[in-house]
Amino acid sequence: MALNPRLPSQTLPVTDHRGYPLTQNVSLAADRLRIDETHRRIDGDISALGAAIDAEAAARAEEIVAEANARIAAIDAEAAARAGGIAAEANARIAAINVETAARMAAIATEVSERASAIGSLEVENSLLRQRLTEEIAQRKTLQSDVSALQSSLVASATVDTTNASNITSGKLSKERIPNINELTEGRLIVDNSGRVKLPYQPAFFAYRNDRNFVPKNHPSLIYGAGVRVVWDHLVTNVGNHYHTSGPQAGRFIAPVNGLYQFTYAQYYGAGDIARGRIARGHIVQDKAGTMAIHNNWDPSRTGSWQGSCTTMLNLNAGDQILCVVECGDDSIYFEKNHSWFCGHLLA
Image (cartoon, rainbow, N blue to C red; front, side, top):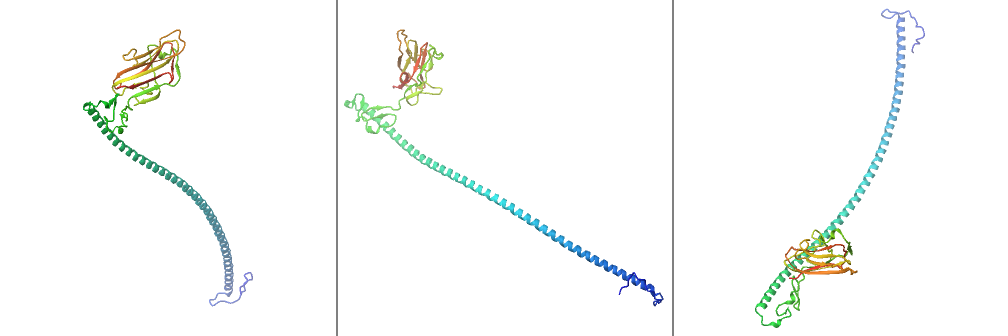
């Protein structure tokens, strides 16, 4: 039983075996008991405090764990949502790229198909052109052979068989004079079954103007004695394209070969005044040799318009140029296909 520290110590008149009084030992024992009790209380307080701290720490740890789990869950949810959005956007972009790629592939396939078809067409056309060229070459060789045979036959007929005059009548060669005449229907020279010779490549042209334009009186470019070149810009025919309607040679016929040529120029004039049109050779030079002119001789009593024309034959060298020149003092000049024209052709 513990002693009450508040009670006075009991004094016993005894001593211990060493001779010390027993009262002193009793006081020490009481102090020790009090110290032990204090230690026990402190230990209990420490234990209680430790338990409280442990409980609070456990509760706080649970709160931290719960908060961390909640944050982790929120982060996971946000990450899942963002991943879902990114996946959806990526899928949408992939789908759009696939659509665009499919469209481009279809366009490329269509273009490739069209080009392949065009190449096929060109190959077919090329094959046909090669075949045609081969046929043309063979035909030309045949024609050259026929022309050689014709020349030989004509020479033989002219130099050997001159007694059979009945075969040559009115300037025609009979079929007896030209063997296989039915075959001579193509090329530069055509001879029909009646012996008529045609020259489809003989240079010839017929040109006119169709602007129905009166050149006004006293026009500066048409002063009498100066002259201006007329460009006949519409063609009825132009065998060999030796007459030019445009470019630096517009209005000029350029002789392709040496020979005798015939030209005709017709012009429509106003009433009562003086004008002149010429077929000029080479370039515009008044009174140049070989020039043929239409003169409008003024008659005060004449009130109507008139038309004049001139025709000339000229020996030309290849490259010579022929053109029309008009001049007027105070007259008007009218261009229209039914009234004014320029034509010419190779005679021989």
